[in-house]
Image (cartoon, rainbow, N blue to C red; front, side):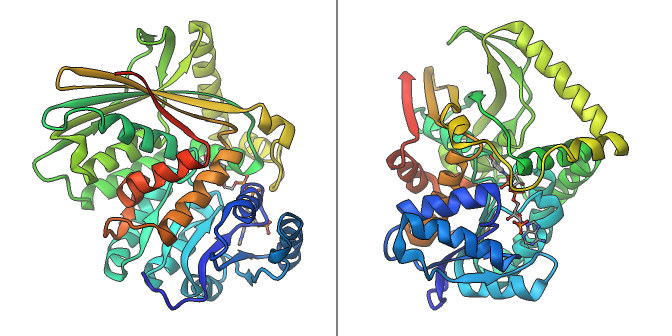
Length: 391
Ligand SMILES: NC(=O)c1ccc[n+]([C@@H]2O[C@H](COP(=O)([O-])OP(=O)(O)OC[C@H]3O[C@@H](n4cnc5c(N)ncnc54)[C@H](OP(=O)(O)O)[C@@H]3O)[C@@H](O)[C@H]2O)c1
């Protein structure tokens, strides 16, 4: 990683809802030696964020501000060339994300984001993975609630099972919380682009090598009752199972034959059914341009849940792992998944890439493949629970 750059970390999108929380997290928790800067397209908004940070730590009153816009490639090149790591919260990523990935891949700069958009991640693999391998850049997507708890939780579970035979892991997500405008816009954008999503996945499959002599799969499960903790579960087709599968492809610890399934867990069967019907209705509505425009207009950029609402939010992901005749149930849990914990996960991922002793890797990587235990230990120190319920 280049060491002769002015900044260890540049945070792009600091003027947005999640970017602002990430900046505040860094102001409270980053080590004193961190050399960092905020980047965004609007200098006045950036200065207002810096004032908020100076109220937390007066030493940040002169924090450097970099003006950069995703429509201006030279401004992104300047950001990428000034930093060892760039963290970005500028989404929807499928609309705004690629120019920064391209700039970081070209400059050999590590990159982290909080996308949950599989179309974007697949396209970035097809278009920028090879260049990042050449320059040594680590491109790590999905470093927020999508997909850190699931990726690191499956990793934590697998490490408790023998790796010399088939291993299966099922993940069950429960969460309570509200959405920001950015999440709402990105989710509606993804629902409207299922055709593009499938095309990007096919393009990736055509060029991505398969793991040598090993089998790794993420397969959809069925609606049913989970015997281990007496709840109902329905398959959850987020990006998370794809990330877990790619981690399994990258690391031998998942064994010669690994299978992952991903579910939403709910207390009552009717909730499962109503949620499924509700989701199908929204997916149908966003495919029609006038209703999509109406839905997108409901929330303005920068809006998100209040501190009081976030304080009541929570997540809990349980994993049931099996292999070599052993069965283990684990749990990853924390507070507000979408924002407070996502800001923490993004900031800790960026600090991990900047400062920790990590395996030599490059190109597009999952959080586990790039950071594994180093990130897990950071998150535990930062208050996210990883524990084994039964072994
Ligand atoms: N994975 C997860 O769990 C998770 C959790 C939370 C959020 N997210 C994702 O994170 C993203 C941000 O969410 P949010 O709620 O923070 O959104 P937001 O408040 O709308 O913030 C969007 C940010 O993007 C910036 N931006 C927009 N267009 C730009 C351009 N042309 N050049 C430079 N910057 C530009 C905005 O700058 P201005 O302030 O100048 O408009 C703002 O800083 C979304 O994609 C969301 O889905 C993911």
